[in-house]
Amino acid sequence: MADHDIAAWIRLTLIPGIGGETQRQLLGTFGLPEAIFAASRAALVGAVGETLAGSIASTDCMAEVEATLAWSREPGNRIITLADAEYPQTLLRGINPPVLLYVKGRAELLNRPALAIVGSRNATRQGEANAEAFATALSQAGLTIVSGLALGIDAAAHRGALNGVGSTIAVIGTGPDRIYPARNAALTRRIAEQGAIVSEFPLGTPPIAGNFPRRNRLIAGIGRGCLVVEAAERSGSLITARLAAESGAEVFAIPGSIHSPHAKGCHKLIKQGAKLVETAQDVMEELRWEGAVAIRAKPVAPGNDPILAALGHDPCDLDTLAERTGLPADALLAALLPLELDGKVAQLPGGRYQRLN
Image (cartoon, rainbow, N blue to C red; front, side):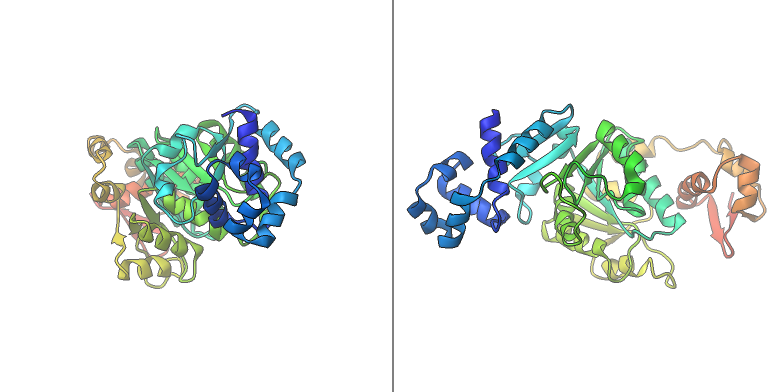
């Protein structure tokens, strides 16, 4: 698409007071954005009323348009509109698809089979380990992992997904030129290089609270399912799960302790019909994803796992296991999770672990 064509799309999204629904209404009435701006005042009034017609005619945003075009010319940056074949087709079946998307990185991931993984920002170490392990397994099986680049579960899911061929898509609630939160700066750069960062918000948009629930519909819409790892009873992750269900996608939840506030949201979803899952295999079989065969074919050979060897046959706490293996606690938790899911290790009270065979 030529710069002057893209410029008209950008201009349409920068007019104050005209949201996505009105933008799509105008496109449906006039065709491409250039036709909207070439239309007569009377025609615009007939389509959207006097006030909005006045905004379309009077808004001067060419400086912002030029800055956005300059951004799109930088290596790895793309602007994808509703008229482009690269636009994620799953979003077209969802709620309020944005007229354009700002993409940094691998735009082809937007139309690959994907799964959303979401959860608490204030996650437990075990929750982050679960998210990273599930994302790794699912990405290695070829599914692209979609999340929101927040702290906690989102960041862990992105880290895990970068370990597999499926890679990851981060849907952000700021402009594409902003990094938020700052603690995820290094992860953001990795995703831009190996995966894709997606935003519907113009350049310079700060982290406004209301933008994050809006971006949740895109996380839900891109994936063919949504896995909630940890969530409080009033969590934004439950909104993402609801939006996924409303768009016809599968919803999955990992159960936890009945005493943990981090598990109450997942238990609520399960009561409402979400699929209870204990392994990545459970997710893929429910999705009928052929990658499930690949995971089933690659178990660790009995007796060859170094974590099991270091664990021994007596209960062992995490600090002792860290001394024996030389691994940090986060790496150990990520390694212990698949062993627990396979029934080889049990977690005991007091943070200890017991080998079962």
